[in-house]
Image (cartoon, rainbow, N blue to C red; front, top):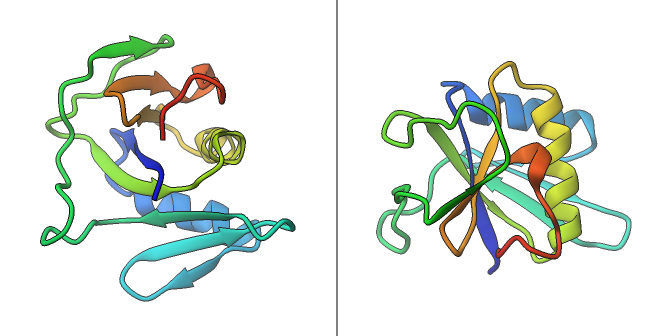
Length: 127
Protein backbone atom coordinates (compact mmCIF):
# COMPACT_ATOMS: atom_id res chain seq x y z
CA UNK A 1 0.00 0.00 0.00
CA UNK A 2 1.20 3.50 -0.78
CA UNK A 3 1.51 5.96 2.05
CA UNK A 4 3.57 8.40 4.09
CA UNK A 5 3.95 9.70 7.62
CA UNK A 6 2.32 12.95 8.69
CA UNK A 7 4.36 14.66 11.40
CA UNK A 8 3.71 17.48 13.86
CA UNK A 9 4.90 18.75 17.21
CA UNK A 10 1.25 18.51 18.33
CA UNK A 11 1.15 15.73 20.92
CA UNK A 12 -2.50 14.97 20.14
CA UNK A 13 -2.03 14.75 16.38
CA UNK A 14 -4.21 11.67 15.87
CA UNK A 15 -7.12 13.21 17.79
CA UNK A 16 -6.98 16.32 15.57
CA UNK A 17 -6.81 14.22 12.41
CA UNK A 18 -9.67 12.01 13.55
CA UNK A 19 -11.89 14.99 14.41
CA UNK A 20 -11.30 16.69 11.04
CA UNK A 21 -11.91 13.52 9.04
CA UNK A 22 -14.99 12.41 11.02
CA UNK A 23 -16.50 15.87 10.47
CA UNK A 24 -15.89 15.27 6.74
CA UNK A 25 -17.70 11.92 6.86
CA UNK A 26 -14.95 9.46 7.79
CA UNK A 27 -15.56 6.49 10.04
CA UNK A 28 -13.39 5.74 13.06
CA UNK A 29 -12.36 2.11 13.36
CA UNK A 30 -11.09 0.02 16.23
CA UNK A 31 -7.40 0.23 16.99
CA UNK A 32 -7.07 4.02 16.59
CA UNK A 33 -7.71 4.12 12.85
CA UNK A 34 -9.88 6.54 10.88
CA UNK A 35 -10.87 6.00 7.25
CA UNK A 36 -12.38 8.38 4.72
CA UNK A 37 -13.92 7.01 1.52
CA UNK A 38 -14.69 9.49 -1.24
CA UNK A 39 -17.39 9.40 -3.96
CA UNK A 40 -15.08 7.40 -6.27
CA UNK A 41 -14.55 4.79 -3.51
CA UNK A 42 -10.96 5.91 -2.92
CA UNK A 43 -9.61 5.46 0.60
CA UNK A 44 -7.62 7.79 2.87
CA UNK A 45 -6.74 5.80 6.00
CA UNK A 46 -4.88 7.17 9.03
CA UNK A 47 -3.30 4.93 11.66
CA UNK A 48 -2.18 6.33 14.98
CA UNK A 49 0.34 3.49 15.32
CA UNK A 50 1.63 0.78 13.03
CA UNK A 51 1.96 -2.85 14.03
CA UNK A 52 5.63 -3.16 15.08
CA UNK A 53 5.62 -6.82 14.05
CA UNK A 54 5.10 -5.89 10.40
CA UNK A 55 6.24 -2.30 9.90
CA UNK A 56 8.95 -0.14 11.39
CA UNK A 57 7.37 2.97 12.92
CA UNK A 58 10.46 5.17 13.16
CA UNK A 59 11.03 8.49 11.48
CA UNK A 60 14.37 8.64 9.72
CA UNK A 61 16.47 11.72 9.06
CA UNK A 62 15.07 13.30 5.89
CA UNK A 63 17.08 13.19 2.68
CA UNK A 64 15.70 16.61 1.69
CA UNK A 65 13.30 19.25 2.99
CA UNK A 66 10.67 20.89 0.80
CA UNK A 67 8.86 24.01 1.93
CA UNK A 68 9.37 26.53 4.68
CA UNK A 69 8.52 26.75 8.33
CA UNK A 70 9.77 25.34 11.58
CA UNK A 71 10.96 21.81 10.84
CA UNK A 72 9.74 19.39 13.51
CA UNK A 73 12.21 17.56 15.69
CA UNK A 74 11.59 14.03 14.43
CA UNK A 75 12.90 12.51 17.66
CA UNK A 76 10.07 14.12 19.68
CA UNK A 77 7.36 14.80 17.08
CA UNK A 78 4.07 12.94 16.87
CA UNK A 79 3.38 11.00 13.70
CA UNK A 80 0.64 8.99 12.06
CA UNK A 81 0.87 6.68 9.07
CA UNK A 82 -1.46 7.54 6.19
CA UNK A 83 -2.29 5.02 3.48
CA UNK A 84 -3.62 6.40 0.22
CA UNK A 85 -3.00 5.35 -3.38
CA UNK A 86 -3.79 8.72 -4.91
CA UNK A 87 -1.32 11.58 -4.52
CA UNK A 88 -3.96 14.23 -5.30
CA UNK A 89 -6.32 12.88 -2.65
CA UNK A 90 -3.46 12.53 -0.16
CA UNK A 91 -2.33 16.12 -0.75
CA UNK A 92 -5.86 17.50 -0.48
CA UNK A 93 -6.67 15.86 2.85
CA UNK A 94 -3.28 16.57 4.41
CA UNK A 95 -3.73 20.25 3.55
CA UNK A 96 -7.28 20.23 4.97
CA UNK A 97 -6.00 18.66 8.20
CA UNK A 98 -3.17 21.20 8.37
CA UNK A 99 -5.63 24.11 8.39
CA UNK A 100 -7.11 22.77 11.63
CA UNK A 101 -3.82 22.36 13.54
CA UNK A 102 -2.11 25.00 15.63
CA UNK A 103 1.29 23.45 14.93
CA UNK A 104 2.63 22.99 11.43
CA UNK A 105 2.01 19.69 9.66
CA UNK A 106 4.73 17.94 7.67
CA UNK A 107 4.89 14.80 5.53
CA UNK A 108 7.79 12.35 5.41
CA UNK A 109 7.42 10.57 2.07
CA UNK A 110 8.69 7.22 0.82
CA UNK A 111 11.84 8.83 -0.63
CA UNK A 112 12.70 10.35 2.75
CA UNK A 113 11.73 13.87 1.71
CA UNK A 114 10.18 15.98 4.47
CA UNK A 115 7.47 18.22 3.00
CA UNK A 116 5.76 21.19 4.62
CA UNK A 117 2.05 20.50 4.07
CA UNK A 118 1.55 23.71 2.07
CA UNK A 119 4.44 22.75 -0.25
CA UNK A 120 3.07 19.33 -1.24
CA UNK A 121 3.05 18.70 -4.99
CA UNK A 122 0.99 15.65 -6.02
CA UNK A 123 3.21 14.91 -9.04
CA UNK A 124 6.38 14.97 -6.92
CA UNK A 125 5.53 13.33 -3.60
CA UNK A 126 6.37 9.62 -3.32
CA UNK A 127 3.79 7.55 -1.47
